[in-house]
Image (cartoon, rainbow, N blue to C red; front, side):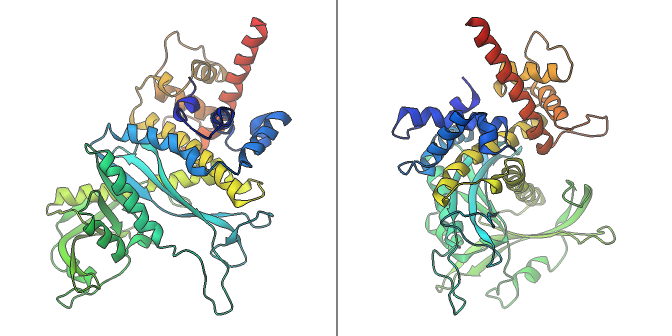
Length: 441
């Protein structure tokens, strides 16, 4: 069974032909993530079938994502703690005639927003997409006001959905992790009223007033630091990887909830010292419902927050690897169906990269078909072994087909070389399969 057939097992779109088309499309899009839909489908008949699928009025994007969510929850059950990362990205379709789009950061731009919940393990293994908000903004009226949904709801409703999953996964502690835009008293109050079925950890945006008259951030960092942590900050756009030293402060405080009451939270401040010249020092101010009183507990919370980078990586694959902003579909509803498939494809690519690093000795056939891993060897002009190799070896071979040099100091491959290499491997595997059909015929 292919990875897509396994991941979409149990899908119910009201028609068995649509069910089969869903996982066939997922396979095709995953095989050529950077290609257009026609190029990924490989023929006019298949392309027409793909566009007919996207035009199904009775199919909702939530129906497409449902079986993947079920598989994600099954993977989550294997872990004691799972981090549920939330963030928003904008998709720019300016210049395209797509009905239902709205303005973006600039009013003249046209596009939509996607706000997923992305589950990862403490080892940063991507476990799946659990939920998503997708919407287009209304244009501003003459007074500068904007009608439509209150967008801040996505953060609170995102926590509520995680709380629902927490009841289904009693053996796994879920932790909601988000950046500064989620710093909302409404979210904290909702979690408090639900009696914290899931923990939350967010980056503080507001320097709130405390009941003692002090400002939050100064009150917490006043006094001697609890300790110092060190970690390697990965390389990012225009920034090299570097070691970071941060001093850490930790304090339990009470925040007024604007309803005459208070909400107890733990505030953690991690402030970089001795940052390199010309580089902005990294300072994180974090809030959580969890009680943390020791340096070890503070270091754990910082580790969890640093894992938030995985959703940025997911967006990178979605937008640059799968090139979803190049989709040419006529309505936002059709875009949503395509995005549901592409989110699963993006998860799989990110998962291959991360498991290749964190679980290098896994059997490659857990994630690659035999034709695929053998193709990775052959295309690199290497003789395939008799027994299935380990995952890391195959991932590196795939990445080498996408431009990864695999020199001694190059470390492990990133997602870009993996998604480029996957296209060649999938083409090769498809060719092998077709050759067998011809021979059998």
